[in-house]
Length: 460
Ligand SMILES: Cc1cc2nc3c(=O)[nH]c(=O)nc-3n(C[C@H](O)[C@H](O)[C@H](O)COP(=O)(O)OP(=O)(O)OC[C@H]3O[C@@H](n4cnc5c(N)ncnc54)[C@H](O)[C@@H]3O)c2cc1C
Image 1 (spheres, rainbow, N blue to C red):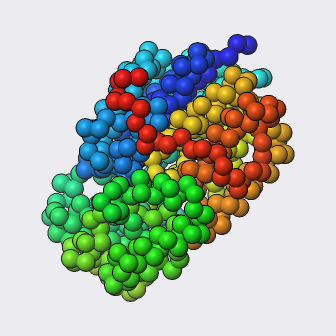
Image 2 (cartoon, rainbow, N blue to C red):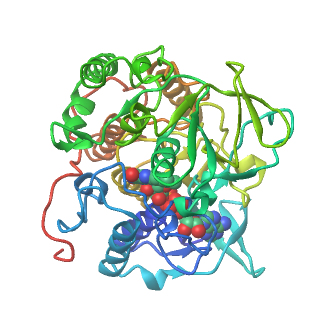
């Protein structure tokens, strides 16, 4: 069978895949559930998969959030919002002529292995055969709530952050925001300007990092640090810097994190600490139970009434179109070689399943190039045992690095990872044979710098 690739999803990662496949002349089809491109960044996407709220600003900065091949326009704000991000993805799609390859309003409902390839079923019942399937359906669309659910009854409004679109919906209400990530801090801060009362509840202490350092975007300042400094030194440096700039976090009434910065994914939010300090956001520990009516009891014994609870408790990894045997194991980092491919299924690839401290775009582009090398036969996977050993080593490294994270998921050290993918691609050119394994400490590869600006958008 001649090569034909199926790409599931036309968000950041599906588009990156389409760009690389199209550039290399590999035949492919993209299937997109919604009526247009953009995934998360199409506000209120009719695919039902977008979790962004109207006021969102990227945490990653403009210069770091474009694909390395296609920088973001300089006229965008330093931290673009969803309209700019969608505009950028539209420009990317037009510039590389990707639209004709995308079938919109088309969901993939099934993927099964069939000999050396895969049969892909669409929501209209049609079936197509592909040699390779690239899964890029994202992981911010299937809401996760605390499990097991809290005992007791709460009769007020409850919504997950995925369904929160603007603070207006909760104007004048008493709101409890649950969670300790970027979204929890952003929503509590935004609500504190319009709600009657905002309480922020987190089960454990957490670090809050600024978006800007020394007047520059933090991700740009961090680039050399994240590239060349070992993880422990990064943690120590950031912890020291946050102590100097913020003081003890317990001074704000927040629980002390009890671990060094970067041992868990920090929340990046500018307005949260000032709002806590000014008393616009009250803080509470975790919820113990619901006490009936609108009452919520916290683990410190305090009880308070709320009109609404906003659950900023994250998302599940879901692949409703994959049978169990094709679904990667989700405990700890996904059991994928180079976070992309299952050792048992060399034609099935997963793109973008990574939690990073910087933008996902360089990762998406690098993963797409790496995958296309394999599809074209330019590189070969190592043996199954070698891949399993590499996956185990990756998991051990992540557990060490993010030692204070209760439920490890897909945390990724971007720059180390980009170096690894680049080395893989060069290894083939220099040595040939299957991709190398167990070369985790090497820092000699050059990282493609996402901040480089070869020219204005549309000029290449
Ligand atoms: C609140 C929030 C803030 C964020 N901030 C940043 C940031 O500052 N910087 C950053 O880099 N990232 C950020 N992200 C991460 C964001 O998810 C990525 O930027 C990016 O959108 C991921 O792209 P993706 O293609 O993997 O997934 P998505 O953007 O979710 O796209 C997946 C696409 O697949 C489609 N799809 C799903 N299932 C099917 C199916 N069965 N058949 C066909 N199509 C399907 C969906 O409709 C969707 O279009 C943020 C995410 C959220 C939720």
